[in-house]
Length: 78
Image (cartoon, rainbow, N blue to C red):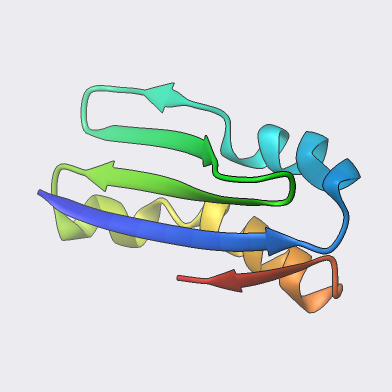
């Protein structure tokens, strides 16, 4: 089992709709993603993979959240 934790702070609470579109909860056979809100503009996304190969292929969420960081819409750590 392999996991990834994406912590973020949004620069505006109105960006939650964007994060919910990116990190909505998913449960598949070999992959699970959960979005947690810890404050008005804070939260984290947990991804759980069956193995490291799947983790290497499923990088869409990570790339999308990094995109928010690059656009100065959020502070993101992975």
